[in-house]
Amino acid sequence: MKILDAGHPFYRPLWRRIAIVAVAFLWAGFELSNGETIWAAVFGAIGLYCGWALLVAYRPVIEEADKDG
Image (tube, rainbow, N blue to C red; front, top):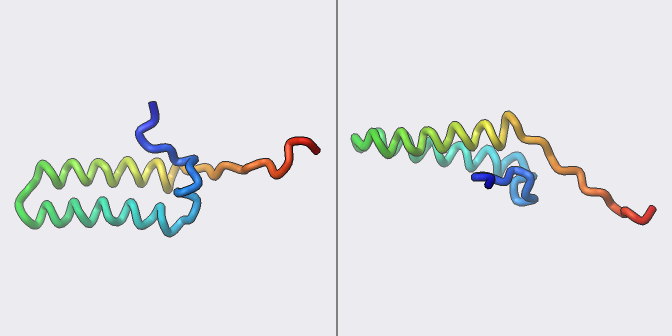
């Protein structure tokens, strides 16, 4: 079972992948500024995982136009 299917077409644009990672880290910073260290750690971990899956290890799926030739 995949937690995040990076091969889904939704994640193809680079700006979406960057935005997802940025929102996770911004939310972690928000939680940290409110003194919620546990939630900050949770969203920081989500940001790290998304950053790895969507930016570092991301490999775009190349679709075959026509399999019949």
